[in-house]
Length: 140
Image (cartoon, rainbow, N blue to C red):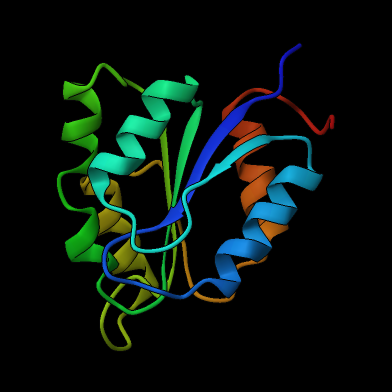
């Protein structure tokens, strides 16, 4: 079977690259085909890359606290681009200030994100979730 494809990047004006590199290596080592867009990625760039690569999932990272603003409308734009049902993951420090994670998670789910990961989530947790969501079990 072909490797499952992920588009990964740091959204908006965020320039935090370390977490992005960690995720890239973790997903690659786990057997995924990762297109890493790097930092300061627009919604349109995520979508163009997902269309080009026939991606199974878009993984959005944000650390500077403005992820909620940067991610609004992404699901609708994916649908408009023909990416109906593509998995949307978001993680990191995605809101300003300390807010109860359950509330943050609910807001991102309402925006169409399938999975929401808070600060300090291990890459393995995201990999496990992706394998489950793609019906892959635990295989490499």
